[in-house]
Image (tube, rainbow, N blue to C red; front, side):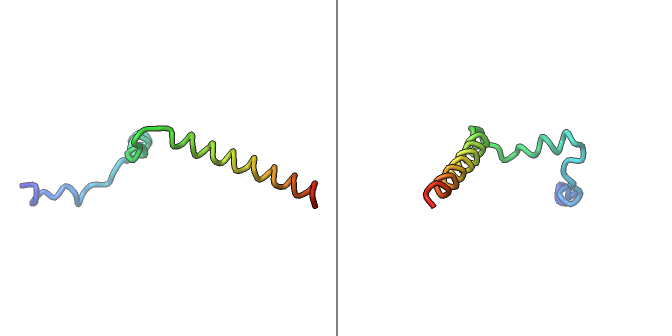
Length: 59
C-alpha cells in the first residue's frame, strides 16, 4: 500500500519558521563545538593582531 501511496514524492519538508528552526538542529549531536569554533576565531584574531604589532616594532 505504501508503494501505491508514495508519500516521499509529496514530501516538502518544514514550511513554518518554527519547523525550519527545529529541523536546522537535526545534525546537532551535542557538545560545545560552536563555542570552540568561536574561541578559535577569537584566538586567531588575537594572534594576528600580535603578529602585526611585532612586525611594526621589528621592521
